[in-house]
Amino acid sequence: MSTLTYCAKQATAMAEFNDGRLLAKIEREQDAFEAATTRAESEVTFNEVLKRLRSASVGRKVALMSCMDNDRAHFVWLLETMFRDAFADQCNRRARRELSKPRHVDLQDEA
View 1 (cartoon, rainbow, N blue to C red):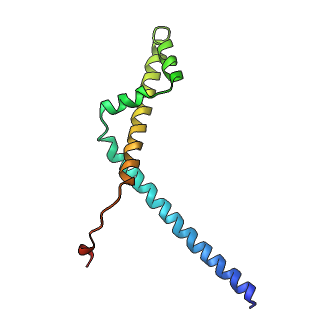
View 2: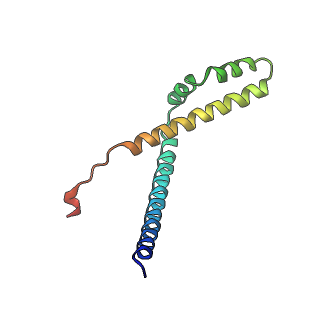
């Protein structure tokens, strides 16, 4: 086997190994984010959702107000959609904040 063939096989093996590790890391991070989001769903307050609603785009606010008297069913649907979006946004913000905190590892417990 030539040196070039050997190097190519080694490089392929290393790439596959690193791809596997990378995929495993991504899956762990996704699982951690989903778990943090689920925890946040039970902790988000009404006031936090209202704060997110206040930061909605002007276009969404105008659309909501313009259909309030004209199309009541659409108004209710749009308001519910905006509320759910604000709730989900706040849950995601909490989850990202939780996961970005530095973790304390007590090395004495490891020994």
